[in-house]
Amino acid sequence: MLRMEVIYGLSLIMFVIGFFGILVRRNAIVMFLSIELMLNSVNILFVAISKASGALDGQVIALFVMAIAAGEAAIGMAIITSYYRKKGNVDIDRAQLLRW
Amino acid sequence: MEIIFYVLAALMILSACGVVFLKKPVHSALSLLFNMVLTAILYLAYLKAPFVAVVQVIVYMGAVVVFVLFVIMLVDLANGGFVEVIRVPRFFAAFVVAFVLLIQFLFLAGFIRGDIPIVSDYIHGDKLAELIFTKYALPFEVVSILIFSAVVGAVAMAKKKL
Image (tube, rainbow over all chains, first blue to last red):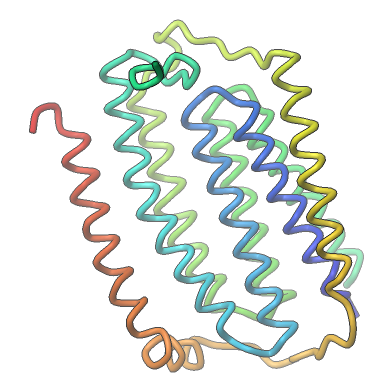
């Protein structure tokens, strides 16, 4: 029988890969995809712990996380398109309107 | 059975690395799509959660990734004069921070041990619906308001002039 710790470890590794993507990439769209990756790995952890403990709350919270990820996708894509319309690219390093 | 799980896990980590390290955003989005498929398979086959797997396929793959692909189509990346080069100092700094985070996670997860009961039967939508509409009824309604306001806000932000 599969040990649940392996699934926890898989989820944690995917979370760290998404975090690394946030730190290292400059393209706003790819950073957004990394955020989705992190949310997805958290969902895996919720469902795995829900199965291990026998309580269903983890699955319900995973469904809420998916709903909020969909709303976040709408907002994020709107921000990216309006930013592109203003600047002509999606380079995060050049987003300095509010910096200094 | 266990071998298949390890193949699945290796493919998931590989596709997650693909999201981060592939050069073109379209390839990253397709790699994320692949990761979502594998996650749905993991939910269905190993975590016995078919309802969450179905919602994963509909919401993530049907809505979020398609949305991202539409925006990639609208945003002209080739014409923006923007070739992304991952600089070496940034790579090393990010690597150190991410590595420390991973070590902390593994340290924390080392305490999750003991007898883990195995619930063998599948958990279908009816049980989740009972929980959603009783214990989590208020968050459910709040999420509906949140998504509505998010869509209105997205339209307001994406318009050229308010």
